[in-house]
Length: 309
Image (cartoon, rainbow, N blue to C red; front, side, top):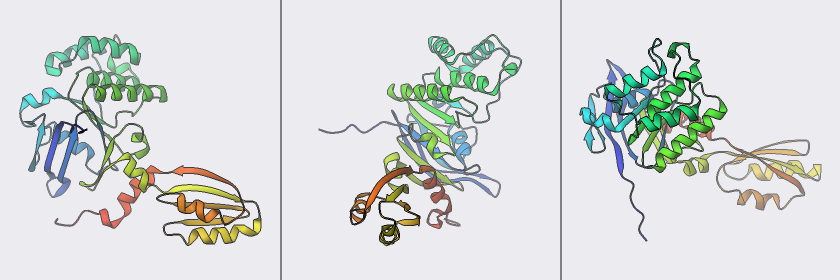
């Protein structure tokens, strides 16, 4: 039984944006399929927002090409397929939410009135108030309506959960899942890996304007350092057990009293086989840290952009 290849609705090829002599993004190639969430990760200044604005043709790349549903991003018709929620959302403060949504739709936003009504109720927004009187969280809700009411093929969401409380973050996650189930492609930027763990199908990592990795969440979990805490029954076993663990490739272990804290990557089988030789009272999983995987991409010189290349 063959598996259908997802349609690529956003295709970036060798995209380079320079600000004078300063690099924005360089030689970025990334294909974003329909029906999936692609996370775009990197610290501040890594080029996430530059990349999203280049897709919208708000910034003009010096090199490379971007297609949106097979149409060049330079063509105004391509933007009809895109919805965008900027990280630095700025809205006219004197307009009410209702007036803002009417103006956006009239300007070519293509908002679905039924979706606007549904989202307004779900997010609990008072559209009769001037936007300038709303809290940051409520202004962000207006931005979510603008993004999700368009029924776009491509959603560009730049750190969209900023200002949202935990309940609304959960509602946001539901909106994202609904969009991809309807066939949309979501490109979601963040600087925190764990924020995307339950949302993204895969993650594209930017470092200093360069794309250094594109991996699935499962691949990233395999990279993550797992943490376990081991308690031995016999305190005399603790040091010997710790030494045996520390001899395994990629394992770090530290003992204190009758407790051993160990970190490792990969399968747990070799850990269990080593522990079977000692009197162990309990093994507690402390978890793997996906955010540390992201830090590895930033600190490991193997992923550093090559000068002039």
